[in-house]
View 1 (cartoon, rainbow, N blue to C red):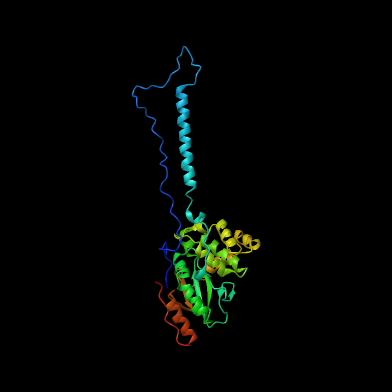
View 2 (spheres, rainbow, N blue to C red):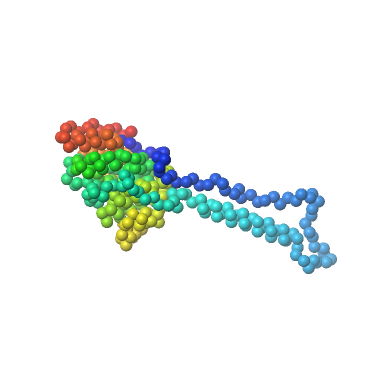
Amino acid sequence: MAKQQRGSSRAPNRPAAPAPSSNRPSGQMPSSRRSSSNWQPNRVSASKKSSGPNRTMLMTIGAVVVGLAIVGFVAIQQLGSTPASSSAALVTPGGANMTPSTIPVNGRTLGDPTAPATIDLYGDFRCSACYQFTEMGTAQQIDANLVATGKAKVVWHDYTIIDHNDGATASRDAANAAWCAADQNKFWVMHDWLYANQSATEAADAFTITRLLAIGQAAGMDMSTFQPCVQNGTHLAAIEAEQTSIPAGVTGTPTTIVNGTLVDATYSAIKAAVDAVVNGSAAPASAAPS
């Protein structure tokens, strides 16, 4: 079983979130030292007040204006350096990375509900190893060769392990958005969009409520029901309850279990397990988590 890996490297065709710019102004004030060592501030004579502007006051005002300009520029730069994952343009999944629309769907189950083999898939939408599983060929082979042929069905389970590790709620909120999509029988559509738009560094801000709504709209959800479902956290209680029933052998994501037997989350291992079920042979040995 392949454990969830934090911040793993992505394939070159994955648009990684750009790092904040390091070319920021230093914020240091320009030097106010004069080149002439004998320069003295203009003073007003006690016997005669000047009717013109006080030179010291003008210099002070000038310094304040310059300082405020620099502070404002630095603030603008910092506001513009919001972590890229929260402001990045949405990526549209397509081609081989889309779950085939020809495969029957029932909620979070993909495939013929009467298929002899069941592949229970435990995943986290923030998980970079799950991205590799979903986008780099494994899921596509499973869909084409095992699910579309009627040998197996895939049942999704949320394991919000990254939230558990860093105390955020983005894994949970993304899962809720996927459940809200499932209410429209579009779970696997949202599944594809979430993985296409996760942070390459598993950052939580890729799945703020605002961005999840934007993803849902781009994915074609009926926003009249999707928006309140996401904003109100309609399925959060069910997702939290699921976390209390994670099988003991599931210690990372993605994890796959075929008809109750834990197997490595690789196509070859999953295919061998499914073939064993379909052919009626002995189930393969349980794979130790790796």
